[in-house]
Length: 253
Ligand code: ZN
Ligand code: FE
Image 1 (cartoon, rainbow, N blue to C red):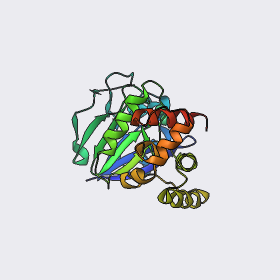
Image 2: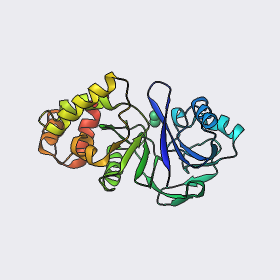
Image 3: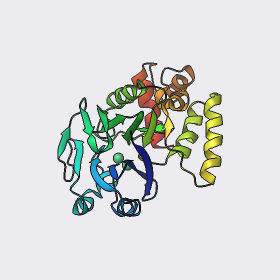
């Protein structure tokens, strides 16, 4: 199958490069320059571009990449995506033949309405939906949609590697501890991440097992998380109400 390389971009974005032999596929190239540098130094040919959603920090580099490579561009059908050649709704299986891989396309509306995640080879590329220790802001969808999307991702195998698009882990875990101070796995993860970040090392990918044990947005059924949501105005222990209350709290944390 393919190997995955991390290409840092802007302040805290990660562009993921999937490679096999001399072929490469990139996910969410918000900026072309760091991608072109890697393609050049590693002597790779860009075959395809996968876009999770329309925000500029995820697709801003597509036009320039297409000046150098006639790549396929996969992206959400219902969003405006530069150079898109393959419009996706979610539910498809796409074949990346240059990598000898297929990817399952998962609709994950919430952050944006057309947001997609791509799952293959045990790797999940989930853009701004599920983050290490947190989740994306709800810009276009509803809390119910976002919660549903996260639950769809949480149903993947526990050893799935979570390749999200931002290095937000440390701040996310600070918030997670405010929600669930009694979670010992969370406390030790937060300590580990603080040490790793102080050295400037990336914390992504994480694994789904770790997220299920420590990410409050995947833990709305846990009594301590429900209690925290009650403290933030939730009047019900319904998972979506709990999710909405803690997502709202995170916006101002
Ligand atoms: Zn975004
Ligand atoms: Fe983003």
